[in-house]
Each structure stands twice: as C-alpha cells, then as structure tokens.
Amino acid sequence: MKVDEVSLQLDHADAAFGHLLLMNSLGTTQPDFSNGLLAQLANAATKGEIVDERQLNFMLTMVTGIEPRDQVEAMLAAQMAAVHNATMTFARRLNHVDNIPQQASAERAFNKLARTFASQLEALKRYRSTGKQTVRVEHVTVNEGGQAIVGNVAHGGRGAPDKMGPTS
Image 1 (cartoon, helix red, strand yellow):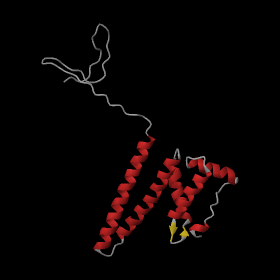
Image 2: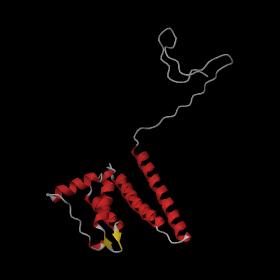
Image 3: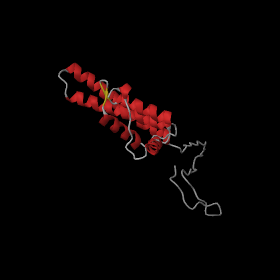
Image 4: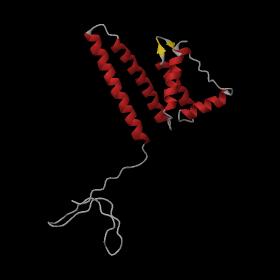
C-alpha cells in the first residue's frame, strides 16, 4: 500500500476504544495528533512508496515502549524510532561495503546517527526530570588553626555536633 493510500486498522474489538488506548499510549488526547504521528511513522516505514507494515508496527512499538507522557515526548520517541532504524540500516551497510569510500560514508552516517540517538535519549531524560537541582555556594573563611566541617551536621545540644563530616 502506498503512503498516500494508508489505512490504519487497530487490532481491537471496539475500534473507538482501541483508538483511545492508542492515543493514551502516545501521551495525547488529540486525535489529530495521533493520526498525524502515525502518518509520519508510516512515511518513515516505507520501502520505496510502499509502507512496510511490519516496520511500522515495530516503530510504533518502540514509541509506545518509551511510554510518552505528552505530545513532546511522543514526537521525540518517534524521532528516536526513526533514528534507530536509520542507524541499523547503516550498520548493515557498513558490514557489506565493497570499497573504502563506501565504508567511510557508511561509518560517518552510522556514527552520527548513533550519537544523535544518544543525544535524544539524554534529551528525553532531561525533559522527564522533574526534580530541580539546586547548587548553593557559600563563602566560608577558615583562619589559620581553624577547621571547617563539610557535609550535613546535626547538633546534639550545647553547641556540640553529634556527627561531623570530613574536615579540611
């Protein structure tokens, strides 16, 4: 089936409920978003002008396996699926080169794609990180003969610390 003739069928007894489940797995409540993302995945899963159903299902499984929480994560997951497929294509090409220029070309593409995937994974991790990191820098002066305590200190009364961290 050609890309412009794609008709996606959900494997669920209730098609409407199946579409809701699919939208949920893509982190969206918007049918236009899920339909658009599926069309883009179908386009990425083509061989020539024909959609490779197995490849489309594989890519969709990669996207839903990332469990996107919103549309941004779903888009990033779709890009990651496409980059992964391209990476594997160039890995295969690298293993079947006939000459040095082909090897150099496949190697460059493979390396760029592999680095791109790693960057995408890091971007997803940063995007999902809800905990804010706080770095507090305080100026401490320690005079000659004095000691500084670095770390958490719990006072046990009368001004004497119970626990002391490393000293410097």
